[in-house]
Image (tube, rainbow, N blue to C red):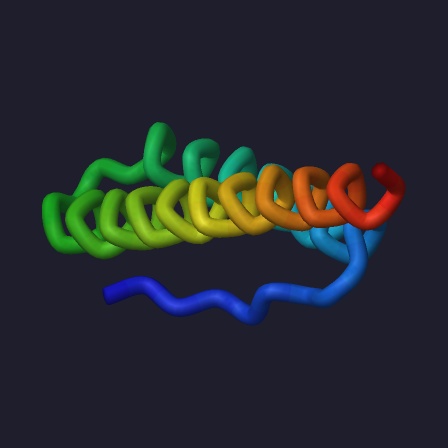
Length: 73
């Protein structure tokens, strides 16, 4: 199970998504440079974890945007 802190505001969620995307790029670079199987396995697990966290944040962003639109209407 992957857990991630979900901020309350849309701008904070967007900032967290940007940060996680930077982390993903970093881990993918590390993974692509890995030669040892043990390192490749650990780094691929990190990549998977960050991807799942990004998915959760994107879902939270959509929910927050829908909630904001409902509050306006």
